[in-house]
Image: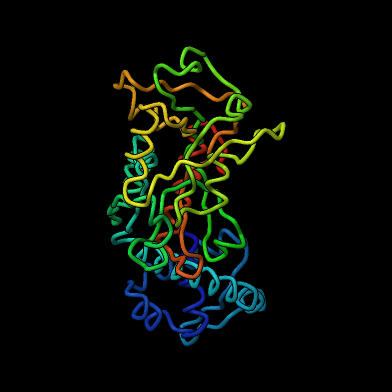
Length: 309
């Protein structure tokens, strides 16, 4: 028997003061009850009960031990019940949305890791267009969005950003004939005076500024004047880049999607910080399933060798 089981037997016997009733309550035999009490007394080094043919009663040490042990045992039982209840809540379907650049290999590995860690859980994935972004979260159409962990506390105060599962390096998409196309890397200062996209109406301002700053660090303007519209911003931006109308700062996922194209070049931007990507959820709807995913994400990030942020 485990120590916890011995403690359960002791506390039940201390209440019943009868080996037969204790055995009946715990679905044990009387010899099992006796062995459990004897093992506990050997571990402590002194008797906890006085036994005669007619009665069972606690020794002074037994009374003191009961007074100190019972609250701790009840707390342990409560903790176990709560943990089992939460584990049960983790089982089921968690709805995860993703953007086109955030739904690649890293997300797939996170999903596999989470489902392996929680066999009763199931992940349902859905693509979220840029023009919607946080709205499916707020409308409770998804539980978690895998997106860029750039939240403005004034505009997204209702959302929580979880740990990063990936830090995406920054690239600039340009037409193959653009003077920058032959470079091994560029600085954000190289965007001075260049034309880029305007912010789509529903796209969060802070996140857009993180992608395409309004000016270079030296103060030179970046002309965010090309209207992408609100339907297929990704497709419109790609076509505009290929025709030389704009240059487009993006992330390394963009590289994988456009690597096959001869009319677009992708150049690393060496002085823009990597973009953190991870789970975002509505704070008021946080639950055991979301917390479990956040825990998996933190473990996943640590295993990849980069602390979660």
